Image 1 (cartoon, rainbow, N blue to C red):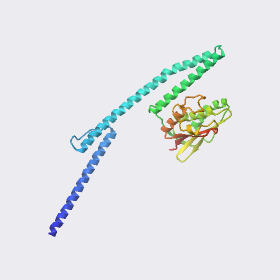
Image 2: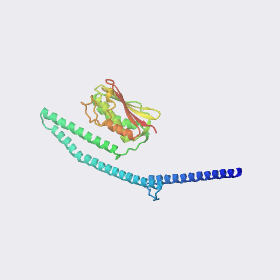
Image 3: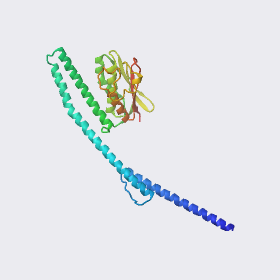
Image 4: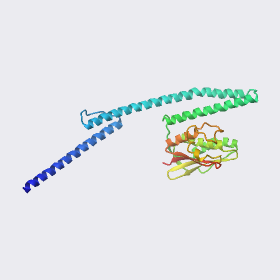
Length: 301
């Protein structure tokens, strides 16, 4: 009797082990099948292989439908990007000549004997045509960045040459306005796209020179941290109210102190777009009557 019970118990144990082994093998086969399905899906080579009523076959069918829909969605997105790219190119091309003609005719009119009132109107036309040209150029650049049409190519480089080029562009404008523009510490390197990061720095310098009153100072420096290198632009302008600081990087936003100044309110927005695509960011520290400090942070590696 005891021998029969022992034999039955051993048989049950063996059966349990066999079932466990079979179950594990089935699970392993299912997992391998799923891994193969996902690998094929990532490679773009997925096709349904089993057509039956099992849950795995149903999963294959659902995955096939999902991938087909995803592929169609990607194709639609690409088609929309191509259309946007063509539209942007058309806008840039079609507006370049009319704007250039406006500036040319305004210049020719200025050379004619005009009444003071007419001279004032001609100067307004030239100013507005320059503003229109700046707006179109900024919108084209921003749209290309936002849609992924224009890609940045960050690489590890020293920051000094790029910062010096940007400062040199605004030195004459600062001198003409009676500002002191200084370039301070320039030791450091980071991962960035030289062309587009220079444009971002120029946007900050443009704002600093634009809003700093005659007799003020603008300075630029590089400061290194553990993970980031910062390019900092200081000015002695009117400062920015704390309530507005969260909005100044928005597209077309003009602060309460900026409405009388030149510009279209897109420079800081474009700067933020550039920095985000490089893995960096931009921030501001300011207070009314105390000037502003705009800082660009770029990853060091």
